[in-house]
Length: 193
Image (cartoon, rainbow, N blue to C red):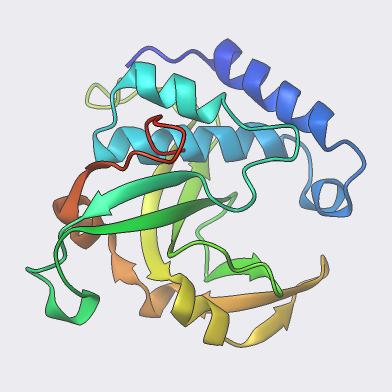
């Protein structure tokens, strides 16, 4: 893949301008939007979404943001009975952490997605011969369902109350990737953003 850091930073700059001054953005630190864009694009690449579609989806947020939904994807979980049946269309929200995360978090009362994926950000890493995506990168850690997250403990780490789910109890990424069937069409007929 050839998504450049300059393209990612340009998308991040547009996002930052669209929600400048928001409390959550200020508290999360420098490069928050860049890290988020990198996580979303890296997750899609991990799932096998083509690069041109990734560019369209990641750069396609409205000025109001993605409203807690990064992707709409189709899954067949029939090989994993605890997760459900085949042919499910589910919404995904990608969260990217600066350090190995202990929690999957979402703002209190804002759980919107069916699935929450947590990624770990690695700044300015040297390119691995197998990793053709970016120099800075984000790698998948684990995932949980919106239902589990919504029922989770309410915690506050200094930037407001959040629903939480411990990463140690979350599901392996291999389950999600092996069950993935493709992006789901949306009402507008696009690729599932």
